[in-house]
Length: 327
Image 1: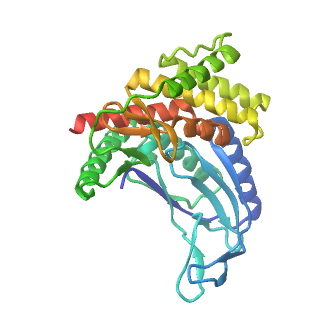
Image 2: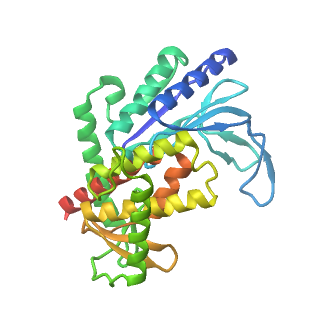
Image 3: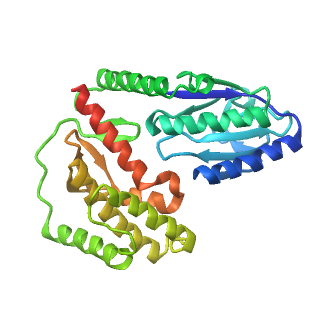
């Protein structure tokens, strides 16, 4: 459920496939998509016990345009050049094949990302895979009608919210687009002085060390962009190349505290201590949304601009608005 684009096609010439992958890397760099190499898959453990199954060989790339968008695989079967999806399955008799129709759900990333995916596919068809067939349920791939895309996205949201409430069992947790939502608003327990001091110390550390020179971490909505600008500099300078190192950990903690405080200041929210995740932000937007800002920061460090703070903020803001409107 939700706005999805699918495509099929093939390119039998290995040289053309290589050219397509080279171009796709450049496109991803320009649009700040995350790129992952996908090497030849030859053997994999099957779903029937410990049987090891032979898997068709593929070569290509997988792109992540946005943390809330499904990955966009550009994977070619080496034998035929058929484009395939990035998973395989056992047909029941040891026959394993990759799915030839690639499905990408863009719903939770929003219309801008959907348009980027369509642009990617349009250029791929024009220059490298002439027989590429694209099924875009919004019609945007064919028409380029941005207003119609917005309307289709809104209509899909209405269906998602209605269905999520219909299927939800009483007392069961709810998640939409991977975002957990508390069933009912409740009075949040006060945060201990120790935890408040920790959040303040982390926020002050970031502002003292990296603030200034045009970067302000003052809990305003514009300061979220400054967090992303700081991370662009961190990417360029290699501050967090060792994502498990102490420097990356310290920056992640400070970024998480600052981002969480900023979200609470702009959308509303309360800090709580979760027994499994530690400090989390709850009741975001007054509609029960839950976020772990420290995990958001760690994801941005590990995965790059596709996991930008601004993207996370926009997703929570828009979901809070839609949930409020649907009540």
